[in-house]
Length: 135
Image (cartoon, rainbow, N blue to C red; front, side):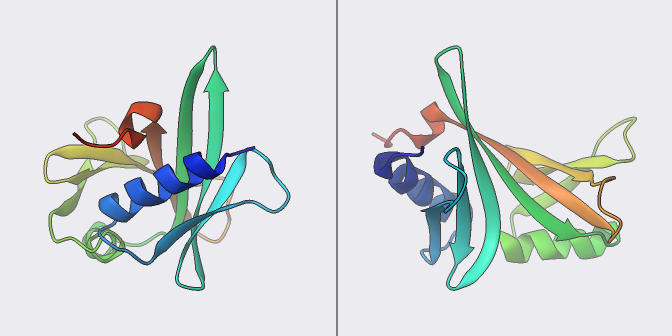
């Protein structure tokens, strides 16, 4: 189960990454190793806790409707509340792209083949060191 300290740290980190103070992380009511992310009263994304061999990380996942590259790029600028966010195509890959904010790699956007509604998935790894307070 995610501790309150983890939830608070994830909330602080994601508020910074998404440039908003309206984001909250909530323990999933049924899944101990998952959390839900909301902005205001709206569901935004989900987080799964992963502890492997003493290493703790979190998998942030957000479903995004599939659309042309230019529209997707504009949507991610809105999602992250930042004009410095961009989608970069990957060499030799047509089913995924990388998301950057300035020159910082944030995660991967890939086709969700299991969803017939034409969705893409944004996946961002959050390491425990990402959640440490800045000095």
